[in-house]
Length: 245
Length: 117
Length: 88
Image 1 (spheres, chains in turn orange, purple, blue):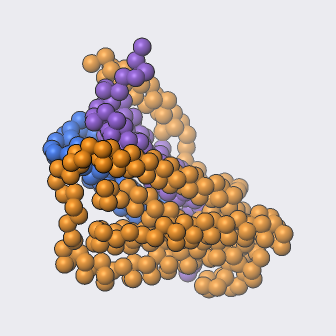
Image 2 (cartoon, one colour):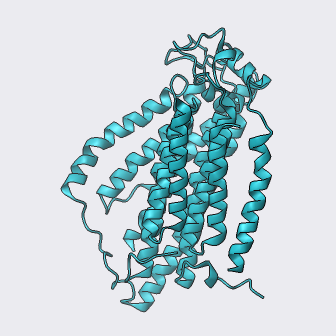
Image 3 (tube, rainbow over the protein chains, first blue to last red):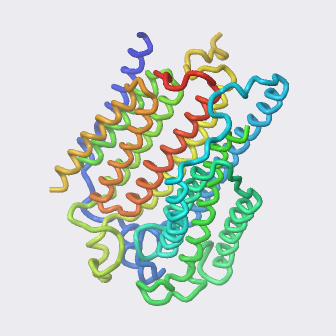
């Protein structure tokens, strides 16, 4: 009961702290100077039609690099914690003999025919859609992060329909680290050939609205898409992999 | 004030209340993800300008007048990366919850008393 | 016009959030938190942020829910026998 009173007190205090944001701060009527620069000069400077993509990949590219690093560390943390637990459990299960085998559903049940056929049909389409999303990141809504998530969902579908499937971790790790490495290399190339780290003007800007335009933005975003896709696939695979116990 | 900000703040308060009063570890993580959504909503609604369109230069937006016709792209960019990080952090928290359950066979936060006295 | 839509979805989101906090069934709570993200993605469309809407729909209501469910399944497997009675 005391805990609820304290919690209510904390929530009321937080509400009082947030109230001025609603009552006293007026919404913007104009773009801030930075946003105005991005909106007016962005298409000419970088050649990207989608301003959000321009901001993420080039103007604030360094932040995105940090963000991908956070994602990598979180993935590594999930993998480290669960893999270690799994090994401990295998040892204890081997020591205790029949301890684990009693629980229901330990032997994976094969997926239904419907799920198998549906995933066979959908998997290539989903992969293609993911690639489409990150290749067109500079033209339409979407980009590396969304495309990567769609790819991870396609892999999840396969994992659900083929319970005994084991993904090749060497390939996953290779794709993930190579795309991360190329991302940094492109950034450094931008530092040498163009205006700064992750500058996209190392390739010709092309015409606004074409697929092959916006310099290195499609390349960078494809690498981000591959990296995010493999990392999220890794998280999902690690969290699901208790089947093999 | 804008409506999106109000909804976002409401979600933040509900999430904080849930995190503080629930004792199930998974409920606490759900509270965290509600706070996450609320914060994203607040940031996006701050960048919204009434009567303007999405920050994509296509047929609907005149390139020369883009500064007067599109909403702020920076909050969108911030929130986009924050959502992806939010997923990774949620997965990490859930992994810890699984590990804690493995230790004590309980999800109740009241059973974890190692730091008490 | 879009103000009313946002208001309706906002009320739904608040209800879903309260339900996610107070539901006795952990599975319903997880689904409710996915519903919050889905409604949020519709609001992002109305707030002229389609990029964020795509991300939120794919990650917030898709993968986050899946990650919660995988963790819950793992916990239930560790629990061994009783499956459904994980309550608050």
